[in-house]
Length: 85
Image (cartoon, rainbow, N blue to C red; front, side):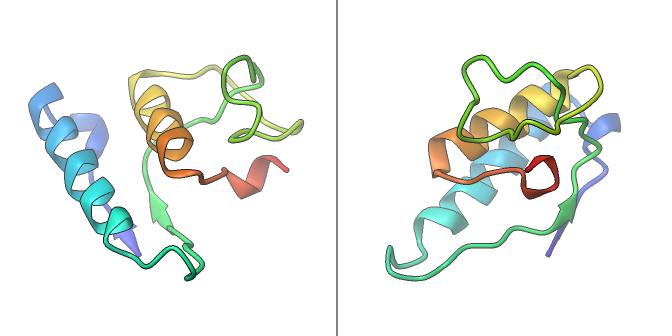
């Protein structure tokens, strides 16, 4: 489970948070299933362009800086925002 007050953090702190999360994710054996639960202060958005495998057809809202970071992380890690499917 992940929790970070990422909305109030500096860009450098946000980058560090996602770097640590990415390192943890990459350390998990490829045959294991990954579920990342957390409060990321993110809106996944309705626009799926570039993130079709990450955001499902039921995304909503307008993305912000935190959203872009999470969507990029999910895309690079082969993960999806399940609440949008």
